[in-house]
Amino acid sequence: MTLTKRVKTAAIKKAQKNDKDTGSAEVQVSVLSKQIEKLASHLKSNHKDNHSRKGLLQMVADRRKHLKYLEKKDSNTYTELVKALGLKK
Image 1 (cartoon, one colour):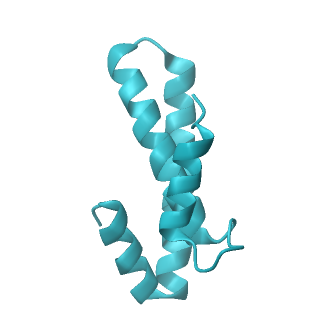
Image 2 (image 1 turned 90 degrees about the vertical axis):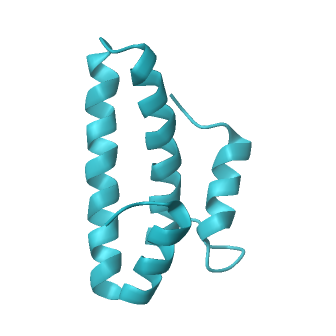
């Protein structure tokens, strides 16, 4: 379940600090959120796909780690990102 190039680029542009930023925590959280949304919709129709479910749980844990790091590093950026992505705290 990979993202299309267009969707991934849009997610990157939504969170990047400058034009060359592709690996910051904000960008990674944004891309992971899009992947999680896509995989969650896949699992709604394919509820027996346990391998994808494990991948989803790993992505959620990875996003949580990035968000925890970002909250510790810069809480203002963290709150802005959570609001922009529509995540709950």
